[in-house]
Length: 156
Ligand SMILES: [Zn+2]
Image (cartoon, rainbow, N blue to C red):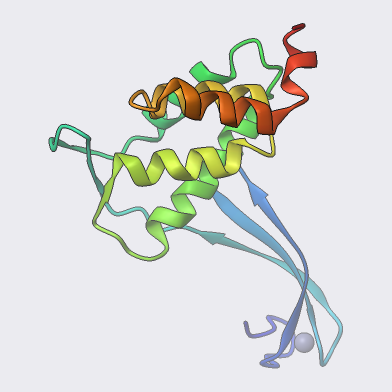
């Protein structure tokens, strides 16, 4: 990144923040030459990506649908809307940055689980049980046991 003040070529990133609403990354940079600070915004270029569903049909990726599915799992789990948006944005980075043209719904599902788990265990388990509807009861219990504290959360 070239410094806009002195055109020096090396700038240091001081801070990177994801902006969920705008689906971009905001970076504070400092020029190593003149020490001026400035901000850059990196945006994911969105080319249509097709999602291959479990029944082999395809449909265009939709952030709205993704958010809806995450929101469904987060109901009554005290997850902020902003957290859900952030998960969606992170997934979009995973999808769009490598320049994929097609992905499977399973890929998205696994990513949701990865990002949802540290946010809310209960929502994670709910998403898991919907996403892996073929999962056996035994497997679900294993997940619940590894989640331990969940019992306290749901009052069991
Ligand atoms: Zn400079």
